[in-house]
Image 1 (cartoon, rainbow, N blue to C red):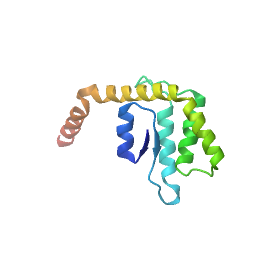
Image 2: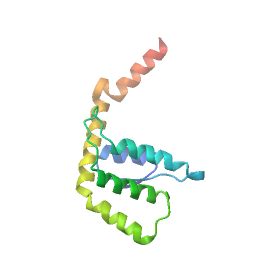
Image 3: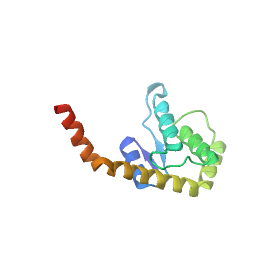
Image 4: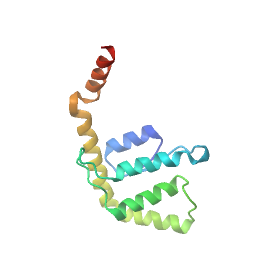
Amino acid sequence: NLVRGEDSLVRALWAGKPLLWQLYPQDEAAHLPKLEAFLQRYLQASSAGGVNALQTEAAQCLQQRALAWNGGGTVNDSVALSQWLQLFAHEAALSVHARNWAQALHAAAASEGGLAGRLALFCACKLE
């Protein structure tokens, strides 16, 4: 999945399919730290959600292609093609990781009364 923008990213994460996120470009490349923060979170292990870290090589391929896709550095056509091929070679690992990530999101949303329940609890606390 090639997704653009935050709303599409959320839907793609919930779908549990491998993805490459293209952020809306911002002045002075301000979008790149946001991408790097997302990738750091997405690629690391999460004991709370039961998500294992993506294999190092697959994670590096995804990170390199995501940064290049978002204008992070100069990449010629030959390098870009090589990055795409390397990323496709890790499709199975990326698929498993995306499914695990989505399952962890679903589990987190269902806990403690789900999103609606947590919102109601938040509002109740504010009213006290």
